[in-house]
Length: 76
Image 1 (tube, rainbow, N blue to C red):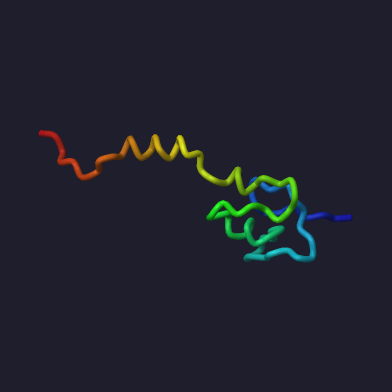
Image 2: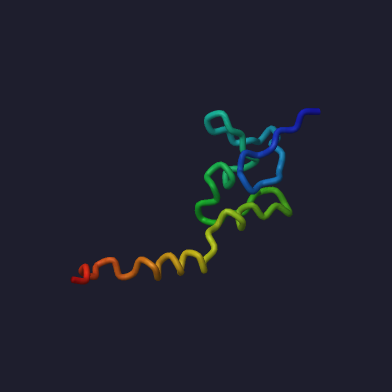
């Protein structure tokens, strides 16, 4: 038996007859195929790859603090 894994980086699911194919990659569901852009969960029970693909809010906040305010003039 030759099982193919989902192409989602954090997914541990196998691809079945309902696979979403994009280019030469197969995904177990549409959420994985679109990269969980809006935090959609994987259709497979027990798989939390959708949560793992979302950015850590603390990291996002730190990056924002480091770049804010971008409109300040350059100091002489």
